[in-house]
Image 1 (tube, rainbow, N blue to C red):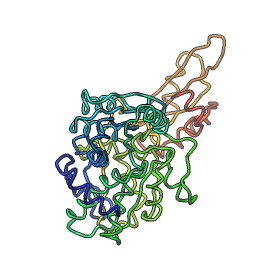
Image 2: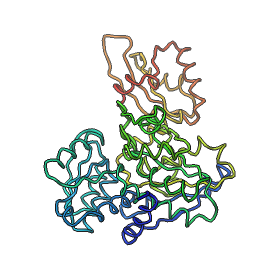
Image 3: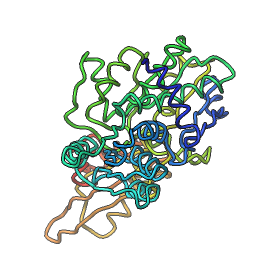
Length: 414
């Protein structure tokens, strides 16, 4: 059966569980990009992400015998919540493997949604490592594995978003931006649009630190990345699905890679300007608009806001990454004079009137004239950096600029 037919079937199965989420025009983004920009608010699902659609469609489709064996899944968070919610509704036991690095907010939500039907096991540092542990458990227990993306029923469930978009959009959709982790959402949605709205350009969006789909499509074969940046935990996998790869390589117009710092800037902007809370993966598509600003001018554009399961404890990291990306925060390793008044002179002679010391780490060595200092400076205007560096040279400070020295930056700052 073609995937489009399975999407229509999925819609009937999930209609009393997953919400038909709103398609909302965003006035600020529309004005900024001279386009009609709409947000598909999947962050408003009961589990705060679109993953409920695919998880429920798969699990409710199991035979009675399969349901008695229980289900297993591996997830960085949102798929786990969808599985947990579905299992509680259907009275099915679930064992859920999540990376040790999963934000605590997500593991707590899984237990909240699944209640007594769910056991959470933390294994590995990435989704891929948790997946391997889940597969070993499945073989031993004979439980049914619910794949987060590489399954036709899961893809069909995610594809129901496309049916809603085509119903709700008052004008033909010119550009549709979809986030990509393992590719289940992109595969399901693009399959519907290819049949029902072939003129729509489907743009996949991946985090720059985990370009597994783009890398695979460029190479012409599904390829495993050696290392990934796990910050965008909802969309960072080393390898996309085999089925999703085959679909996406034919259906996607393009894939945009968005720097993690840009994603953080978008998260903060959505919160401050729109009162919308999104997780890093949920901000991907909106962050990608800057890279398509010329193409989308005057067009009808939709961004899928995939999820809002953000952990408040990550706020400081999000702010830090945003400032670094925007060129507003800079770290230096200095040889600093060890004498009274040196810090006051540094503030007066090196910093501009609007610059601020945001980080200062110093350990005095009494038998030396100078000692190492790590200083972080926050600017209001990124162009002011050149003035600071000029002042450092004029005052004969020996220094290293840490922002561009990733290994040393990580060692000294974290």
